[in-house]
Amino acid sequence: MKFYEYGDKNLPHIMLLHGAGWSYWLYLREARLLQNKYHVILPVIDGHGEEGTVPYTSTEKIVDQLIEYIYKNCGGKLFAVSGVSLGGQIAIELLSRKKDIVEKAIIESGLCIPTPFLLKYSTFTIKLCCKWMFSKTFNKWALKMLPKRMQLPNEIAELYLRDFTSMKTETMNRIFQTYFQYTIKESLKDSKADTLFWYGSKEMQCIKQSAKLFQSYMKKCKIVELKGYAHSEISSYHPEEWVEKAEEFFKH
Image 1 (cartoon, helix red, strand yellow):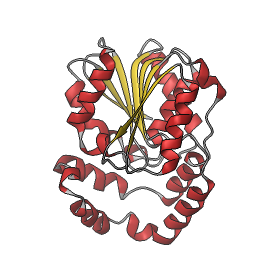
Image 2 (spheres, rainbow, N blue to C red):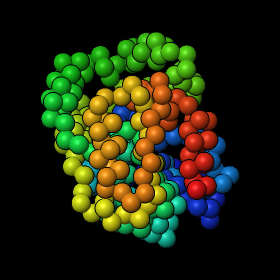
Image 3 (cartoon, rainbow, N blue to C red):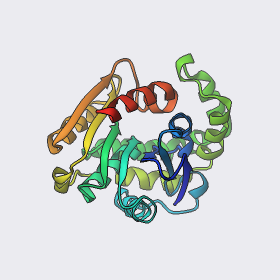
């Protein structure tokens, strides 16, 4: 697993975990905004971007690697972790492994309820549409069709086209197999982390249900619905707002 780092390593450590199909650059703008105050760590999850040739195994196996990195490079503890979608689920698993490995956590749209229907639907969609779904022609068009508030800067758009269009079908299917069947762990109840669960008001019901289930396991958890936002919108398209909300949470 590759790790990009921003800021002085002596500053508080923050790890930001991207979602499926994206890579470290999803949080690149946030990292640049935070690097004067924090040591920001952006992992490239197996099967994505430059790690595209590394087989994706499971949420649990990814967390094994993250824990190894945290103990080797961060003294065994992070000030904060945040993850979106698949990254949010990975962050939930991290919290369940070590009760004091993180002081603060922001979970954005992290699914923690098994959804067999979505697994079947997503697998079928990939099988039917993979040729054009991962084509550069389609994705260039799709990026241009996004509403103005969700337009990516050229640097990020180029990285998106480079990495998303090189995703392997078997990688995405493996992600679906683990993501949509993930079950929250009882050990999460031992976590000492102060947590925040964000989701967009336009998200699927299973994400909203996941927020409530996650909250029921945590000693400290606040749920925030982002009005008018779709899945992963704040982290992917509104980095300044993300940083503003995150820093406000970090202060308390």
